[in-house]
Length: 371
Image (cartoon, rainbow, N blue to C red; front, top):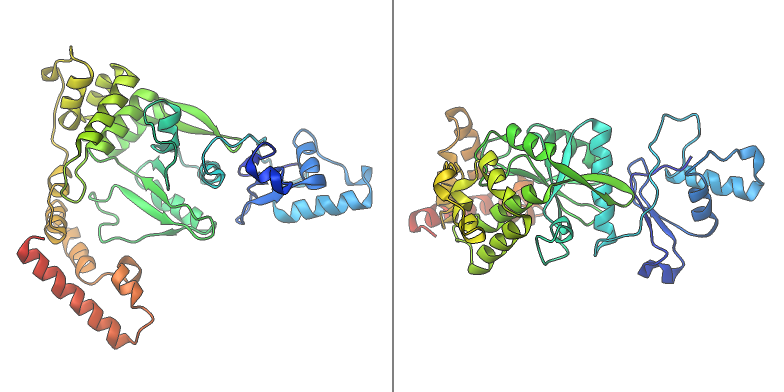
């Protein structure tokens, strides 16, 4: 039987000029496989029924064995594998589309719920003009990010370590790509949302719709919820800088496009503090006094311009038992958690130590100067 963790029919794609017909992600950790000719025909033929080795000639058996070796074909006595037919690519990057399908299938394999947010789905829903995003964003229930990261490590992704890992300050876990070349951001909460993290995820999950990525049905937010998520993304402070007029306009356009049901979603997610002005602009009859406006806990530190002072403000939000650990990570980070130290990792240990000391000194100076 044919098997995959995502499959694309590229006969009408630019890859067809090379004679390629299908791009199939195997069901075990390995790169996508490009099929053409007899291999593509046999894989498609094995979608609906198992192919009996005794009914085919030796060259065909050789191709079947090769497909099985690639991980895109399984024996009929193998555990059940959902059949995923190849679909034409609809993303600008077919590689990114395969990553969406892979993530969805891996999450299903390890038993966790996953919702894909932002990116090209916003364009598909008419909420954003930009088609492509450089990474893939998903949202999982708090605690499931480590399960997904461990599962994706087998496929070549590595979790990027930060000082705030495992604390309420961190809202996502970045997975850095290997050969796949596509970073993944695994969210467990979204900045600007003030309801409990698990409650927020359950609200989003309960109102999902489906979209096909590489033959796989994945879950994405409803347009109303997605418009709120996108508006929060556009209006959040970044490194102390407030949003631009262009970002505010993008937020208003998304809310307007999704309709006034975004008002109820804003209330459900506790995002009124961030979105009340955008909602008033999107819907002139909207009365902001009717919506709660709790201040997000992360809005204060996100609004601080100085990096050291911003980090210190974030540390103050943590329980006492976590503060010492985070401060230690900030002052003396693991090698893979600092670009400066990572760049010096090939040097003599003494030189690496001096780089660390200079980093601490520079940070202290910036803390005092406020830059």
